[in-house]
Length: 226
Image (cartoon, rainbow, N blue to C red; front, side, top):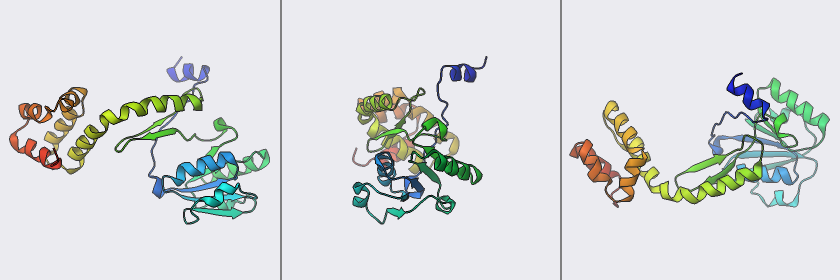
């Protein structure tokens, strides 16, 4: 039996992770209850363009910036989802849910079903951020509170990686070298051994053992404050 089949026997979920640029997303939310508000706030904080369709809205929806969140009062119709990337279904009327799902499938829209997450195409992970790192956590057994616990634990350790990730990111994105040399450098510097010497303030001495003075000088120039 394949590993995939064995996992499914135990009820584990199979995810295909992808990270979107929030400010480029168009989100359509159908429903305006507490669950919808939580999901709207998630994308609101990422700068997404959001439209919410509902017959009634919680008062908190009116506190959101109307330039970022458009509230539309009315019943569901297919036209609402045509110009959206992601559809969030946050109602409990099964007939309407099935209609929305059918429309999403025909139009190849990604949709999330808040009333039954396994009946949708995905879930919104628990996310945590430091200055230079974002992590997203799901559990394979559908345990949101467990995801929060794990995410909080991970958050505690992000700080120790933050500045090193900043440095290695600057080397990747701003340092111009021969491709073969740069690939080797990135493989070398993105390692726990190199981070150890960075934490000890010895990173440039270590780099000089393997790379010429010109390369080390260019790396130092990326971090003039050091």
